[in-house]
Image 1 (cartoon, one colour):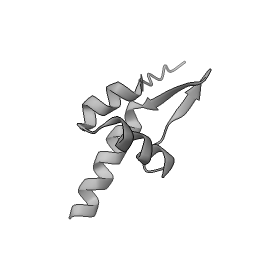
Image 2: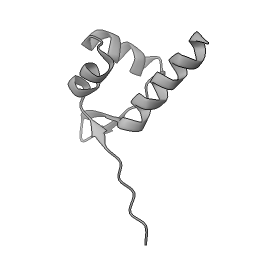
Image 3: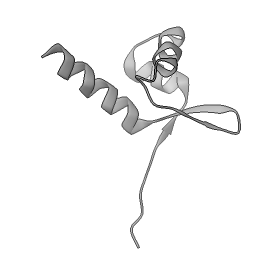
Image 4: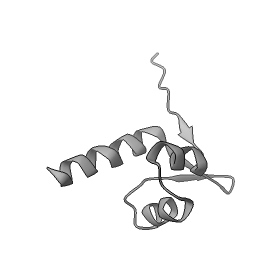
Length: 62
């Protein structure tokens, strides 16, 4: 059996990683540029979603 490790970040943790403010992170979530889920009402962002978002920005800039 394989084990998958998925790390879920809080909004403040994602803010720190992206060096963005709270409003901007929620704007990215609303516009679906940054994937997120809700766990019992708590918003969580998969760490892979942050990495994907950064890679997409790099691709757009190229």
